[in-house]
Image (cartoon, helix red, strand yellow):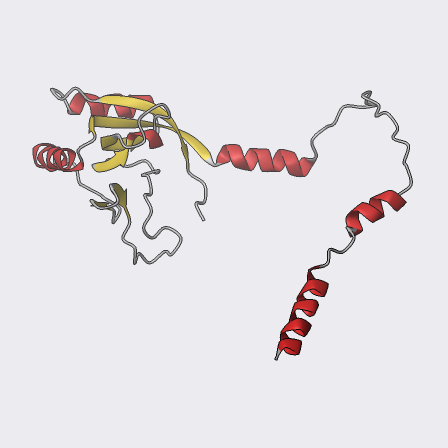
Length: 189
């Protein structure tokens, strides 16, 4: 039995013996290389190809300047939802939530987790198309320097300033405002 233990210890010691570092030995065998200085002069300016220009045009076509009319803002979803229902009754402007609701546990306006589109399911999707409908949206979607949790009671998105101004007048005496926003209207998949 002692012989068996002695044999086991010898095997362990042999297995634990360090091996030479192959990277270090390979570096020792490497030949020195002469590095040439890079030239900072260019013979001609780089010009974008037609494909790059086309891609840039497609990207700029993916955005549109729209005017977003906002009746109120705040952090309390339920308070703004009540104001949205009151505004609907007073003005007759339709409500369109785009199937989104407020998930209290996640503190997020979002589509249902079992939504038909798997990519968008459980996510917030901002209103992007011109429409005269009421909805609750994150203000940061339209105004970059806003708090990411600030909610806006949107009364419509308009293609031109004169339409947005008319919508503002129709909302008086509410102190609504409009935002000129560059909105992504391209594919979100």
